[in-house]
Every structure is written in structure tokens, then in C-alpha cells.
Length: 241
Ligand code: PEP
Ligand code: MN
View 1: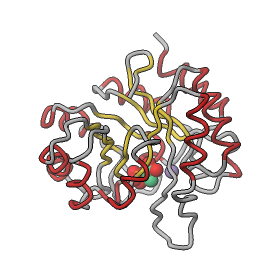
View 2: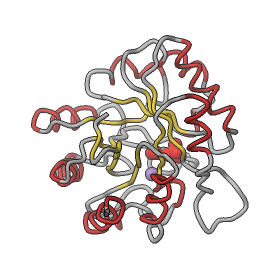
View 3: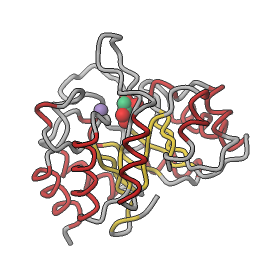
View 4: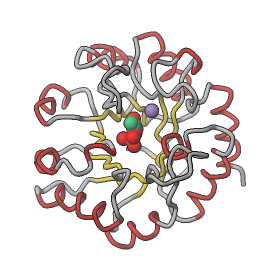
């Protein structure tokens, strides 16, 4: 992963929907010097009736974009059987919250030489989160980024409760770079800049944010994805002196 202004910024849509929206997003973000792009072709969703991602054929879209743009695609892996097909086009394998405890998947990811972005399980303790990372290390892969994405609680004002204490604690425990996912933790856009600054203040090495060219028409997480204008304003605020 590549740093922008000294942090790992990962941005891009909730999911890859089609070539047009993806290339538009990549063109915009790379102009802003952000090259770590969310590129999910698989979307594990709570409801089986929700959009599940465009699937493995989405790799053709990513591969075409890579021919023109120097980007680092971060994409969720939901099953070890897809590692082989994804390994050429995907630069960072994301393990989503719902799979943090899929130990067989973690063991397989321990055997590869690509970086892993491991998201905290929505009900995982900090100790369980650290142990999940150890499964990957145990297989021989130390190239791991951890991602705090909020934990479940009683208050639905935010989508999850962003546990910023996890950031210095998990870093102290594992020594691994830690990224805060502002979109899935908050589920809303109005306090994203404040929480982004807070995340960096407590030692986060990076931020993840959902960005979509036309969020209102997005196939998933429409309410929390930033349009380009909103993203620009966020960048200004988190990087202001
Ligand atoms: C995501 O980052 O696309 C996602 C679904 O997040 P999480 O696994 O944290 O729910
Ligand atoms: Mn999403």
C-alpha cells in the first residue's frame, strides 16, 4: 500500500458495480494522489436478497483499469478458493468483519505473499482481533494491516460504535499498522471529518472511506458513500495543518 501525506488512505466504492463508475472513481482518486482503491467484487451481505457483488468476472474490469492506471486494488476475499484467480489483479486481500474468525481462510492467506487487510469482527474483542492476525502470521505472512471498523452496541445513531481505543491498544499488542474505516463504523457522513482527525490523533496509520461517483444510485451503502465533492472536503479537513 502507498502512503499519501504520510498515511495509508484507502478510498473507493462500497463495491465494483461496472467499468464506468470504477474508472471514473479511479481517475478522480489518482488525481488526488490516492492510489489504494477499494475494489470489492464480492460483498458478503447480511441479507441474501441484497446485492452480493458482481463476482469473479469483475476482475476483467479491474485488470483493464490497471492497464492505464497505477493503482493498488484492495478487494475482499470471501473464500480461499478464489485466491488463485484474484492473485494477479488484486494487490491487497481484505478479510471482512464477517470473516475475521474464518480461521481456515486466515491460514490460507498466511501462505501467500500479498498484503492482507484484516478487519475487526463486529463483536470481536481486541484480544480476538490480535489472535486472528496471528493466524496469518503463523502461516508465514507478516504483511498485515489491521482495520478498526466499529463494534456492535445498542445505539443505532451510528452504524457501529467506532472504538478508537482499539487503535493504540492493537498497535501496542501487535506492532501492525492500523487503519480506521470511517464509513462502516459511522454509517453516516456528517461527522466523518471529525472522526478521521480523531483516528489520526490516536495513532491510526491510515483511513478507509467509501467514495462513489453517484452515491444515491449506489447498489450498496448509498447512505454512507461520499461523492467526489464531499470527499474533497474531507481531504481538506483531515490534512489541514
Ligand atoms: C467493506 O469494507 O466492504 C465491508 C463490508 O466492511 P465490514 O467487513 O467491516 O463490514
Ligand atoms: Mn460498504
